[in-house]
Picture 1: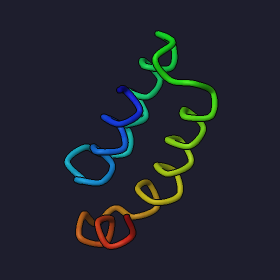
Picture 2 (picture 1 turned 180 degrees about the horizontal axis):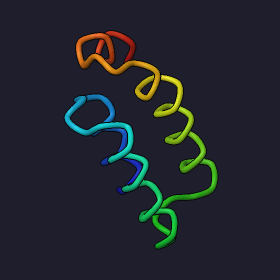
Picture 3 (picture 1 turned 30 degrees about the vertical axis):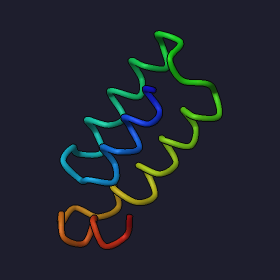
Picture 4 (picture 1 turned 180 degrees about the vertical axis):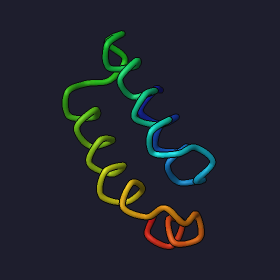
Length: 62
Protein backbone atom coordinates (compact mmCIF):
# COMPACT_ATOMS: atom_id res chain seq x y z
CA UNK A 1 0.00 0.00 0.00
CA UNK A 2 2.81 2.47 0.83
CA UNK A 3 4.41 1.74 -2.53
CA UNK A 4 1.18 2.53 -4.39
CA UNK A 5 0.74 5.75 -2.43
CA UNK A 6 4.25 6.92 -3.31
CA UNK A 7 3.82 5.98 -6.97
CA UNK A 8 0.56 7.96 -7.10
CA UNK A 9 2.19 10.98 -5.48
CA UNK A 10 4.96 10.86 -8.06
CA UNK A 11 2.44 10.59 -10.89
CA UNK A 12 0.21 13.45 -9.80
CA UNK A 13 3.11 15.84 -9.13
CA UNK A 14 1.59 17.30 -5.96
CA UNK A 15 4.66 16.66 -3.81
CA UNK A 16 8.23 17.71 -4.32
CA UNK A 17 10.97 15.16 -4.79
CA UNK A 18 12.30 15.95 -1.33
CA UNK A 19 8.88 15.34 0.22
CA UNK A 20 8.50 12.02 -1.56
CA UNK A 21 11.98 10.91 -0.53
CA UNK A 22 11.25 11.83 3.09
CA UNK A 23 8.04 9.79 2.98
CA UNK A 24 9.86 6.88 1.35
CA UNK A 25 12.50 6.98 4.09
CA UNK A 26 9.82 6.77 6.78
CA UNK A 27 7.95 3.95 5.05
CA UNK A 28 11.19 2.06 4.48
CA UNK A 29 12.32 2.49 8.10
CA UNK A 30 8.94 1.23 9.28
CA UNK A 31 9.25 -1.85 7.09
CA UNK A 32 6.42 -0.82 4.78
CA UNK A 33 8.61 -0.89 1.64
CA UNK A 34 10.86 -3.68 0.44
CA UNK A 35 14.45 -2.98 -0.55
CA UNK A 36 13.45 -3.19 -4.22
CA UNK A 37 10.46 -0.85 -3.83
CA UNK A 38 12.53 1.70 -1.94
CA UNK A 39 15.29 1.60 -4.54
CA UNK A 40 12.76 2.06 -7.35
CA UNK A 41 11.10 5.06 -5.67
CA UNK A 42 14.47 6.70 -5.02
CA UNK A 43 15.55 6.04 -8.60
CA UNK A 44 12.34 7.51 -10.05
CA UNK A 45 12.56 10.59 -7.88
CA UNK A 46 16.23 11.26 -8.44
CA UNK A 47 16.09 10.74 -12.20
CA UNK A 48 12.72 12.31 -12.99
CA UNK A 49 11.78 14.85 -10.36
CA UNK A 50 14.90 16.30 -8.79
CA UNK A 51 16.41 16.93 -12.22
CA UNK A 52 13.52 19.20 -13.23
CA UNK A 53 12.65 22.17 -11.06
CA UNK A 54 9.82 23.48 -13.23
CA UNK A 55 6.56 21.66 -12.42
CA UNK A 56 5.40 21.67 -16.05
CA UNK A 57 8.66 20.09 -17.17
CA UNK A 58 8.50 17.60 -14.29
CA UNK A 59 5.03 16.39 -15.31
CA UNK A 60 6.18 15.94 -18.90
CA UNK A 61 8.71 13.31 -17.90
CA UNK A 62 6.53 11.13 -15.66
